[in-house]
Structure formats: structure tokens, C-alpha cells
Image (cartoon, rainbow, N blue to C red; front, side, top):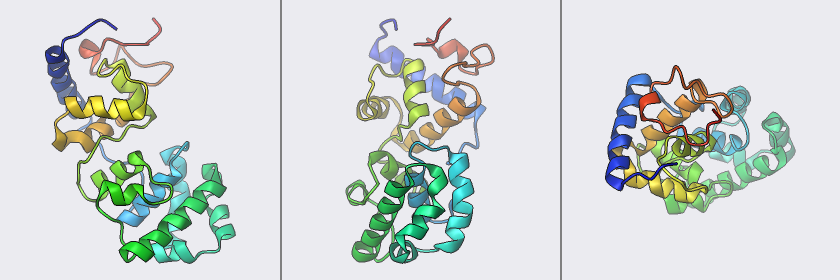
Length: 218
């Protein structure tokens, strides 16, 4: 990756944001949910699993368990079987139940609205907290860094960092705060629809003129 001044990277980021907004004006969180508890549960299930699979599972799961208390009081074996196809189901079911018990005990069954309170819940790290805060409450505390955001932010030359924490820090410096949640959606949509990990469609890419294609095999 060639050296680029901070001013140059900031200007290119502004152009990238504009390009992504034109390409995906209606980008949104693709985890199906109708309330913050459902989004929190779905996000926990999405670890190392596709959103498509999670949505198939939660379509039935959210019919059976309608509140944090329902998840908290469910027989753990039943919950494990209900989420089995998302992978790592024992750990996910355990975290969901422990998380929902804390919601009931500490927050009256409601999802809290601060990073500190969310990350104190079982199975909820900073990425999960950012998903919930940004999409359930419209609160921009940070940038969601999943595999798509990590890959594309490096490929677009927005960061040289390799850990989610450092990538998030770099993106928070470049992207206006009011766009943090939406920026993640744009990168995720672009990663799924245009910029695949192994065979990115560089010729058809809306960001072709702005992208250094870092790490792309030519």
C-alpha cells in the first residue's frame, strides 16, 4: 500500500462515503428483528454464521420466545436445539440465556443503551454492542467491525490495522460520527454484493477509481 497523507486519506474517505451512499442508498441491518431484545439475540447468534442462516432460525425462535424473560426461563436444552444450526450452539444458547437473565435482573427485561452496560452482558462484545446501539437506538458510539468491514477497510486503504479494535479506531477518525452505523452497513452490503474476499468484481465496482485494491491478487 502506497503512503498517503492524512489529508489525502480523509478526502478519499469522503468520496468513498459518497460512492457507497449512491450505490446502496437503502442499506440496513439484514438481521431480522422487531425490537432490541430480538436484535441482541440475533447478533449473538450471528457470530461465525451468516445472516441468512440466523434469519431462518430466528423466524421460529422469536415466535417461541417473545421476551427476555422467555429466553431467561427456557429449558437450556430446548434453546440449544432451537439455535443448533447456527453453529457453536451450546455456547450461544448459554450466552443468550445468561444475557437475558441479566436483562431481567438488572434492566427490567429491557436492553440498556450504553456501551458499558451492553458489554457487561454475556455474549455481547463491542461489535454486538455497536450493532444494537446503532440499529435499535440510533446511537453512534463506534463502528461495527465484522469480517466484511475489516476486509474492505483494509482493501480500500482506510487502515493498515489488523485487529477489530484498531480498525474501529482508524475508521472513527475518518468517518463522521453521525455516519458510523450506516458506514458499516454500506461496507457490508458492498462486501456481499460486489467486493468478495476471493474474487472481487473490481471491473464493475462503483469505487474502482478510489480503491488501491490493497491485497487483491492481480
